[in-house]
Length: 347
Ligand SMILES: NC(=O)C1=CN([C@@H]2O[C@H](COP(=O)(O)OP(=O)(O)OC[C@H]3O[C@@H](n4cnc5c(N)ncnc54)[C@H](OP(=O)(O)O)[C@@H]3O)[C@@H](O)[C@H]2O)C=CC1
Ligand SMILES: CC(=O)N[C@@H](CCC(=O)OP(=O)(O)O)C(=O)O
Image 1: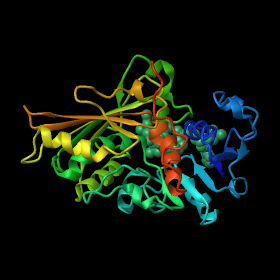
Image 2: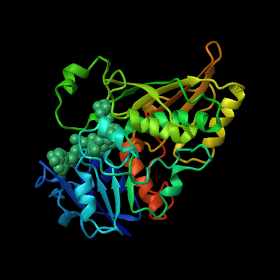
Image 3: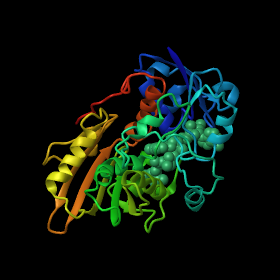
């Protein structure tokens, strides 16, 4: 058995990790820490975590987090480095925040207002590179892992196969994605009040301003084997969980619908957490609710010569907490899907 602590267990991502670890046969849940909610019983902040109801949230300190095999950090950006630096090198630290996702310091300083912390192995196991290798390779035995952002998970897994195989041109990539409100965390934000969100969809971070833009470019650049820029527009949808991302790119010279289909099929044939749907079926957020699977579909709009790839993901499961547990499994040498739900809740 391994022991795991969760820092930020009172937040959406931390509570999702706890939900998943409760069903993990090889992990015992240790310290659960919080900030403003420290001292409260779990039932007051995450009543869905019934088996943990009477556990009391501890303050987020290195002392509370020490002595575990695994420490999950589910904290706001900028809080991971100080804690990670004080944990032993042999402790597996899985960071759900953005702090260690970007390799390019200038990209970080353009989009974030905290100091650049560095880059850790990137926790998107299925991400394919131009040489056919996967990001998974760097996760085996790793002791520091950066969990991807939720939009980059959906977008990158939707489009990477076409870039890696060369059936999509690496320039002129356009992405529009809709996210449920839990993507923003649980702290109160005026634009996320129920009366503002219900019955309405709205864009934000328009014009290349969203901080996930460089992370998507990093991922798709790795797939393409060359620097890549994207136009990315996020939108907010009136639902608690889920992201639906639509990515389009120009059909590469010499490619056709059959080679496009083959690129996606070959890339994902052996991936347990990415499901390429049968032709004609399209991903829906409702089908991946609570599941650690990303559903993907691709087609070619031959009239305009563009490849259209769509992905649906639960932002809190495969989009954060599930990816964190999947990466832990790989790092610890466990079967990759141990403890993870691979079917969604329906209806
Ligand atoms: N929500 C999502 O879909 C995704 C989230 N992430 C990332 O995961 C991390 C957590 O996100 P999420 O759970 O949504 O956020 P929440 O706002 O829901 O939770 C934040 C957590 O951090 C704690 N916290 C707040 N301020 C501090 C502080 N100054 N020092 C230490 N702890 C603090 C909170 O404690 P308390 O409530 O007790 O004050 C809470 O436990 C973020 O980095 C986020 O970007 C990544 C991918 C997707
Ligand atoms: C709906 C919503 O607000 N979503 C968040 C994305 C959160 C996420 O994935 O996370 P990181 O903060 O870890 O990068 C946003 O757009 O900022």
